[in-house]
Length: 95
Image 1 (cartoon, rainbow, N blue to C red):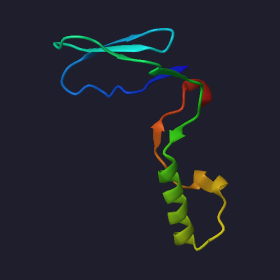
Image 2: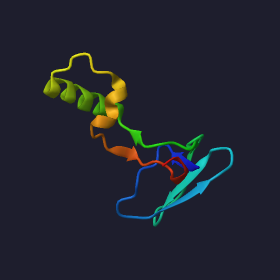
Image 3: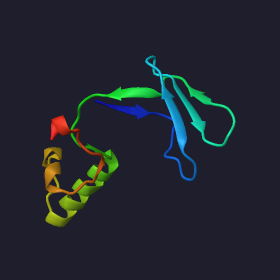
Image 4: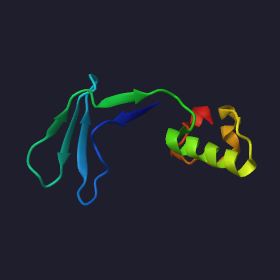
């Protein structure tokens, strides 16, 4: 299982120290800066999953395929025919 940390971006120039508590509270400290930033309920468990994709990219890809092939009533279950990059890859257990 993975954890999503809401409200924290990937550091660019300085490392971050991150403390995750069992109640979901996350404390973040940017190295060489003073103080900690506390984020309530920021750590969220992500259950086992397949590839997580961006919904709009999938929709746009399907529409592009419908226009290219001329099928106006194409079903959404045909999404595997189109390339939509994974935002978060599938966990090993779900591949």
